[in-house]
Length: 87
Image (spheres, helix red, strand yellow):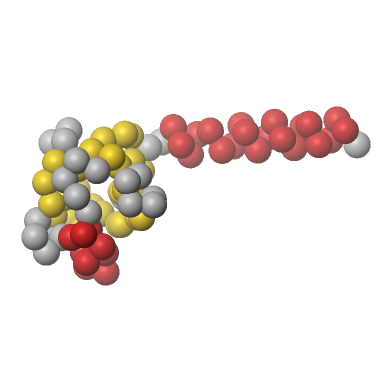
């Protein structure tokens, strides 16, 4: 029984690690006034999904973010998430 629990814990760690590794640390360089465009400090520009533009407009330049595929997570805003696509 104990061996089964240890194995399950190890599998959980093994499968959780790649999800975090797929994200890149960055920060917000600029945000358009209406939140439809975000440019990260790295220079990458993203169009924000219409349903997330109000949220993005409230974010601050300089906030630390994670870029995870087509999602930006604002680590300085309680991990709020918005959907984006390359500009």
